Every structure is written in structure tokens, then in C-alpha cells.
Length: 383
Ligand SMILES: NC(=O)c1ccc[n+]([C@@H]2O[C@H](COP(=O)([O-])OP(=O)(O)OC[C@H]3O[C@@H](n4cnc5c(N)ncnc54)[C@H](OP(=O)(O)O)[C@@H]3O)[C@@H](O)[C@H]2O)c1
Image 1 (tube, helix red, strand yellow):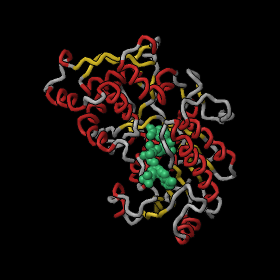
Image 2 (image 1 turned 90 degrees about the vertical axis):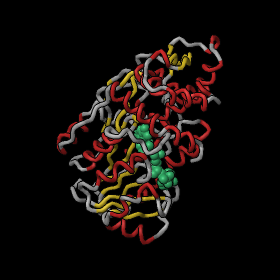
Image 3 (image 1 turned 60 degrees about the vertical axis):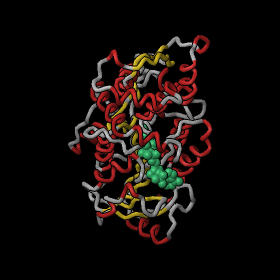
Image 4 (image 1 turned 60 degrees about the horizontal axis):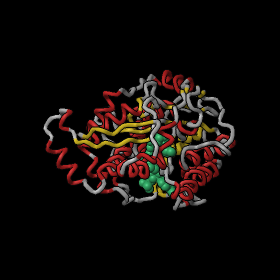
């Protein structure tokens, strides 16, 4: 990819897209941002930059763009497509929508990109968890993903992301795949942009499962606490099914965007997969402790032998809310993702990773509960 190129970015209003745009501006000369809305408020500050062009469209439409003239400009000018649009819903009830957007939308973007006259690369944002079934194994960045049939994907989202990689990899376009791990807040501010679809969204499930209708009581309790002395914590005895030593690959969103920016600006990314992961994933027991500290509760723990027959009311609620779509995340050991291709790009572009630690995760959760959780809860279910 030549520096200073012209980019078409899909999903610019999403959590990743919003964080990617300012970084892309470091080297790209022009960015077309595809949006379904004609005035996305989350992009208002970027739209003042005369290198950003909002183009309206919907990747689920065969013809994608609402205006033919936009399509004509893009076909003639764009040298790189970065396709980030996806539904990140893990729910079985949304399977059809998830597949239509994640697989159908990617297919439409591939078909459209064939028309672009000067395309250097089509970068598809996948997920590191397409390889989630390979528990504890080392997963290289070669093309090992063999077939999406009979793979034990943890949920329809993972399944759809596996299924979408195949048309990308089988296309004759100069494709490149980026597979990031789990997005969490910004490393400086902790901010997620009031997004409940982040890794921190796990909090929501916990909050609902443990406190149910007692949200007011919970908030009063939390706000009453001036310090964080442990004995004052609210007792919330509740076991969740999961193995304490299972790790989760949480990353700062600015680090994900920084690494992806380095990849898309690098030479020799075509027909290559790039894992964007942290070298220091945290265990789910560290994760649950951070969440409990931030909520000022204690008593929630993972138990690998947890059996629903011996469960209490809260545990059954938790099982229903969290375990159904997320259980594979707590009961499967993650693969060890190799990062040789990504390392080369980061080195070429002089980018340094911002690795996660349990202490930083504590801080992220504290920021999230203090500054964003109430707004997220208020908006929950409205999207
Ligand atoms: N979140 C994670 O932890 C995570 C981890 C690994 C990989 N990923 C991958 O990273 C990518 C970005 O994820 P994200 O969390 O940033 O997603 P997100 O915040 O949910 O954003 C999704 C984006 O897709 C757009 N979109 C939805 N339907 C569309 C359509 N029919 N046509 C055009 N645009 C449409 C949304 O636009 P509107 O504003 O119009 O809704 C939004 O900009 C995805 O490919 C995801 O699979 C995410």
C-alpha cells in the first residue's frame, strides 16, 4: 500500500471506525466514509476536515451507494478499501441479520471493489476469534482456516465471521485480513463512547444478572462508598460457569486502531492475515475481580464444575443472561495467536504496542462504571 492513498472506509461510525479515522488521517490523503446516515453526530468533528468525504450507502444493498455519482468518484479514485462493518451480536435470535450483514455485506463490498480502477488492497476486518475452536494451540497467520462447515464456533457471530473470510480469501482482489481481539476503552481516558458492544459490555450482563430489579439500591450503595475498603462491598454470591485460568484478549481501542493503521500503511500486506492481539491476555478471574472492584461487590466467581442443578436464583439468571451467548468465552482456552506479519508491519511503521495488564484493566473498569455505565444502561436495548 502506497502512503498518501485514497481510502473507502465502511463502518466509520462504529467503535473501531471512529477511532481509526484520526489515525488514517496521519498518512492518507483522502477518506471516503460510508454511512447510512446523512449527518452522523459521532463524526461531526472529523467532517470539518476537508480530507473526509461522507458517502451515503448501505452494504446490504447490492448497489451499496445511494448516489451513483458517489460510486463513480470512488471507483475512479480509491486505492484502498477498509471494510469494518459487521453486526457483533452473539445472539442466536439475531442469526439471520448477523449473517446477512456480515457475510452478505462483505460479499457486496467485494463485488463493488472489483470495479475500483486503482485498488492496491481490500482490507477486511475479521476477528481473532475465528480461530477460537483451536483451544491452547498456536495459530499462525497463514491460511489455516480450512472450512466453516462443522467448526464449533461459539456463537452465530463467530460463525458469520468465519464464513465471511472465505469469499475474501477466494477473491481475485488484492485482499488482506486483519483479525483483532476484544475491544475495550481508550488507554488514556478509558472512554468507549457509551458503547455496550465492547468487552466491557460484559458488565451489563453481570449487573442485570446479579442485581436484577434492584438497580436503584445498587447505585445508592455504590455512590455511598467513599473508599473502596473491601469489607464494605455488597455481598453478591454467585457462581458463573467458567475456568479461572481461561484468558481473554482484551485490548485498548486506541491500540487496536494504531496497529490496524500501521498494517494498512505497510508494504506487502496483500494475501496476508494479521493478528492484532495483546501478548498479555488477562484471566477471567482477573476480569471478574476488576469488575467486582468497580461495582463494589464481592462474591461472584467462576467455577468450572458449576452444575445448574445446585444453583441459586441469581446463578440461574446469570446463566441465562451471560452464559448462553458467551459461555464458550469462559470455558474454552484461547489459542496462542502468532503475530509475525503484524510484527513486521508495526516495525516498518515504527508503532509500539500498548499492552493490557490486570492493573490497567482495573482502571478501565473503574472508569467505565464511573463515567459511562449509567448512560449505557439508559440506552440499552434502544439500538
Ligand atoms: N467489538 C469488538 O470487540 C470486536 C473484536 C474483534 C473484531 N471486531 C470486528 O471489528 C469490526 C468493527 O466492530 P465495532 O465493534 O467497531 O462495530 P460497531 O461499533 O457495532 O459498528 C458497526 C458499524 O457498521 C455500520 N453498519 C451496520 N449496518 C450497516 C449497513 N447495513 N450498511 C453500512 N454500515 C452498516 C454501523 O453504522 P451505523 O452507525 O449506521 O449503525 C457502524 O458504523 C467488525 O467487523 C467486528 O466484527 C470487533
